[in-house]
Structure formats: C-alpha cells, structure tokens
Length: 288
Image 1 (tube, rainbow, N blue to C red):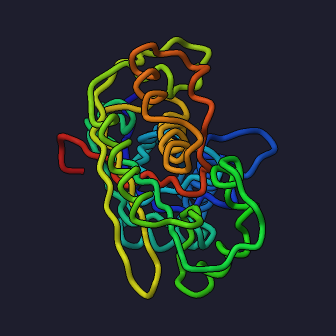
Image 2 (cartoon, one colour; image 1 turned 30 degrees about the vertical axis):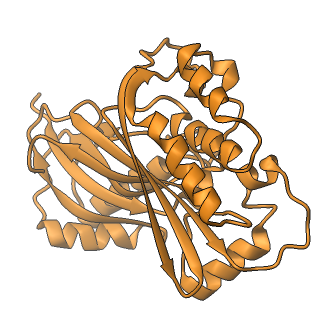
C-alpha cells in the first residue's frame, strides 16, 4: 500500500500538559494533536486512518514550542484545501495548541530524523519587585512555585508565559552568564549534562550557544539560545541550571570546566525549571 504523508507546523504552550508524547491516562500535546486529527477526519467524513506519526523532538512537561514539526501518514489521501483543513483542525484543539501550516510532503520524509538543526531558547525575566522570602539556588531553579507571585504579576501585566524569574539580577550577574556560556559554544562530550536513557546515546555533539539581553519598562529579559543537530535528555535544562548555579555563587567556573574535562552524569545536579524552555525552530534541508 502506498501511504500519504503530511506535515503540520504546531505552536503550543506546554505549561498545562504532562509532556509531549502520548501516555496512557495523561493529557499530552501529541494526544491532543492525534485526537484533533481524527475529529477533523470525522468532520469531513474522510475514510482514512493515521498509520504513523513523527515529530521534531519530544518536549518535557511544561516545555513549549514555537515550531514543532509533525508529520503523519494516512492510508488514504486528504483531499481537502489546506486552509480549510487547518481551520477545522484548530477548532478541535485547545487554545494553547495551534497549527499554522499543513501540506503534503514526500512519503519518505520524517520530521524527527531529517531535521538538520534544532534551536531551543530558554527565557528568564528579572523585574524590580521586592522579595520578602529568603531564596537559595533550588528556589531559583524550581522557580515557578517559589516565585509564583512574581511570575503571575509579569504574566498578567505583560502577557509572558514561558519564562522563569531571576531575583536580584544585575550587571555582574549578566557578565557571569556571558562568561559561563562561552564554555557551551563548543564541540565536546556533554555527558555531564545528560540524564541517561535506557538506550546509550552518543554524548559528543557540537553546540552553538548565544545570549541576548533585552530591557523595556524596567523588565530585563534574558534569552539563552542553543543550536545543535540533536540534544540529549534534559541537556538544556542542566546547562541552564549549571549556568545559574554559577551566576548565583553556588559553584565556581572551575566546576564547569571539570564537567567537560571529566564528564560524568552525576555532576549535572543543577536542573532548571521546564517553564523557561521553548523549542524555537526546526530546520530542514528541504522547503516544507
């Protein structure tokens, strides 16, 4: 049988979901996509079924995406105008998940294995709000609960959703982020920044890292950007957690050097909240 292959570009706020991949008894992004597709097929009275589904990359609970690329194969063609199909498909999705591109692709295309680069950003925000509680590095990394009032204030006033809050942020801490990030613009063994899977992974990869600082209306926005062909499990959150541990004087720069010189997963003990992590872009050789 010759299958038909289609691609979807999807944006979502992952805060309210138990991760990306379909899991029994849990509300996930992939489950919402799968159910909405079947609802759309039923709406148009299409006699077809989903044979397989792939995606650029799996995201953890509370992680968001701006360009998550799905492809799914069906046993019969979808003979519906793309714009109309998207309108109906989005009707069956919740407000925090939306598709913005739909079209057929070659049957051999796989959105996971053909991505030549993935770009993630990690967003943090600092704001001049008085903090009455005493905080430590765990409060900063876990963030969304400890600094809930600060997060809610910024969300309500400015509309930001995907970020963590950094207390007492100043120019010295800004420079420490720049200094620490220089160690993550490299090709190296990232085993120290990896939560091992059941299947052994190649932990040597090339990573490009950048940081941008934006200020407006007394808000300081810190955008950390990471680009690579692939990423290890929890890698970015452990990198950000390590950087923030250095910024807030929990570890020294020598500790970061040692994580590369003597890689060991047990050294990656600082992990940042998933709330600030966003799959920003998925890059392919072909025009989808």
